[in-house]
Length: 275
Image 1 (cartoon, helix red, strand yellow):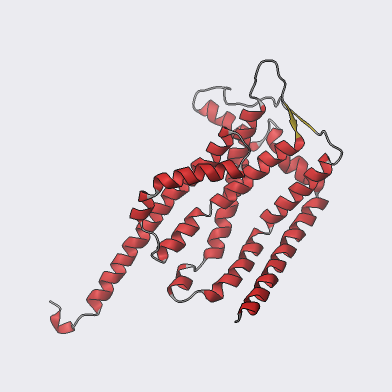
Image 2 (tube, helix red, strand yellow):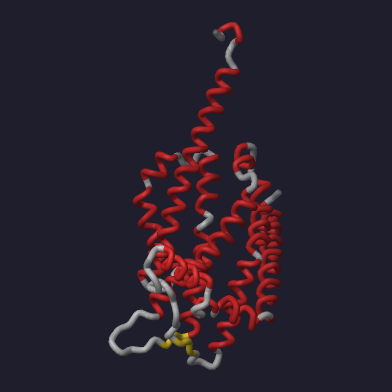
């Protein structure tokens, strides 16, 4: 394929991806009441599943009701004419991307896959399923773990007698950015696995750049999360954990490759030389 053919193929895949995202966004836009009441505003309900789990954990560990959330005191307000409509559009767009992620990733992968050869194609086998599974695991982690913790801490942080009245868009950006960021950062094991399969990274090199990864992670967390330290730390910690998992994955791949090379070396020798 020539350059223009590649460009046309890219345009086609991006168009298909956009159609998938728009389809998901339109579906969520129509389901406005369910989306906001059952998903977006659910972490403001003391009966939210995460809060009930905290309460059960408190009773199990002997902490009593200390971990129970019995009341949400901060209020959500809208101060602009287009505030509610803009919030509706924002939620629909982000939700559409989340719903269409398997389709979008598959379209991008179909554009990349023909350019892979031999070892590269073998290393990327099953990448679509792995990326999709990790993405939705990350989404759930962000929505059920990080977002409620952030909302409870930030929404109820008191300074003097100042009452917390949170702008709707601020609330939505906090929930959306944390949830989406968690889904994306859970792709780290997939990336490390692919690079380790290609021999571009090793457990030794990953350990060597661990400190650099910490700095980059904090910078990225500062970009993709609201401007507060708590959210940045809550997003950064899973990234570092996934990085450590990536090191273990790279180590396992290296051992498997070494055994394979040793086996091939023994099998390729002269039979008369074998003991």
